[in-house]
Amino acid sequence: MPRFVALFRGINVGKAKRIAMADLRALLASSSLGYQNVQTLLNSGNAVFDGPASTSAAQHALRIREAVASELGVDALVIVKSAKDIAAVVAGNKLAAIATDPSRLLVALTHDAKSLAALAALAEAEWGAEQVHVGTHAAYVWCANGILESKAAVALLKVLASAGTTRNWATVEKLHNLLKAAS
Image (cartoon, rainbow, N blue to C red; front, side, top):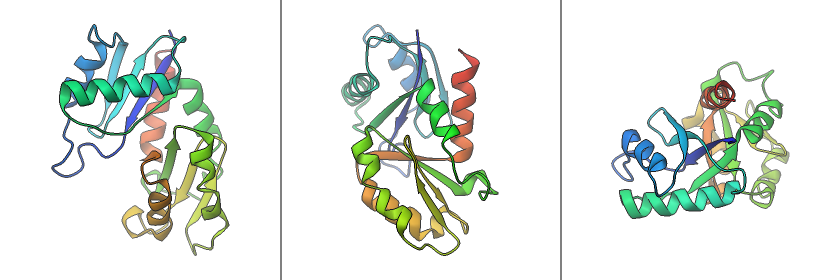
């Protein structure tokens, strides 16, 4: 079975939308979803799992979102990417040469190319020390002074709205390694 990662938007940030990672792992491995080799990373909604190749990433995302809302009482956007997709995200990082701190490189992932294309205008804007690159599989924002101080990150999140989620580069690399380790 192929390996996937489910990326939740906005869970375990502040007091709203709290999900225990043990509960998430149990739900994903339950008979209702039936995913195998489930692992979570950090407390921010990253779950790696094996799932049937006959089910698309979008179908996995919908199944997971509905099950989490029904069983755990939290409705949150879920983006699912395959191991191959995440490898392409890693390979497509054109900002790696300037991003000296992986915690300041933000990666935006969306369900589809149309949502990602909506971010393209950000790459054309002038951001001073910050840079934006919109690739084929993700958008990358180098936040030179940190994500909380980044005007480019604020703009990206505004355009992204509810169409995607973000992770810092350090988390993307950890997920990539988890996905490769099980292959």
